[in-house]
Image 1 (tube, rainbow, N blue to C red):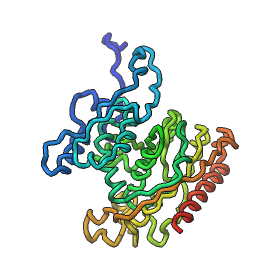
Image 2 (image 1 turned 180 degrees about the vertical axis):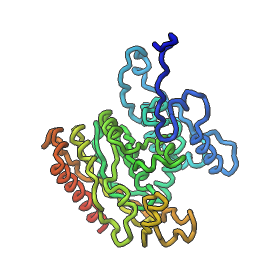
Image 3 (image 1 turned 120 degrees about the vertical axis):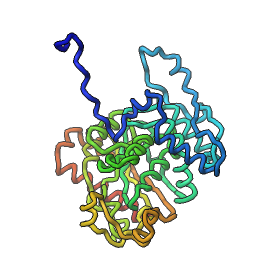
Length: 360
């Protein structure tokens, strides 16, 4: 109690990603991101008065019967167990029944918001746009989905490229569409992305997470699939002469995989290095502007911001055999820098082999 007989004021809550999604959710105000997505819905049908896609999902009856005082984990519903809404926008109508079932099954396990800012309604509204990119723009083909564990914590490790993170978006969507029950990989994004207005909130709302050790450990501890690009920004800014040559790896993902007893699934993403070929990186200018890269491409800066848009290249995603280092080493091995670096190099070689094999 304070000296005036009143309880001391609660310490201020640190707001992550420039917005507190829990306060936003309880305030009754419209989330600016959801308003923006709704505007895109209306634009897609050229002026029709459209209600944005907001699936109303039927939760499992067993979960509904559980007393609120004794919550239990909700069983993961299979796609046929979930009621789907009718498509209400032009882009939503592009999404086939099977993909809609996958989305509805996933959303049935999300209770509004999660601790990292993932919003069920924002994810539902954004899905048709990314699905259109997946099917019509990048025309993604993929293989070996059976190598993705269906449950438990996993680390998906992939090569990175293409300036803007469309490779991450396509990888997330591919896993969601080809796992049962559908899994939403939580991509670890660079910390500098968490400082970008609007972008930081958008990433959080659709399930991506700023890369801190605490976030990574918590995601794996909750049994999530975590998508990492161990090259970091070196992957997206490599010049055209280094296309599909993996750069230096950060090794923190191996430490977390060992501690969480999680397998590492190598991924090869073909197409991303061709979507925005970098002729030259003006590093002094990038440092001056506080950006990871200041690229010169065949279209940028000549066409302004539009020059950063990716070319409509075809993507191919291939999954490799899971690397179960936790079966050979205990969690204490994460404290050995030499071993962690050696294991990270094994992952790098596995991804490079997948890339080379599928480029041929």
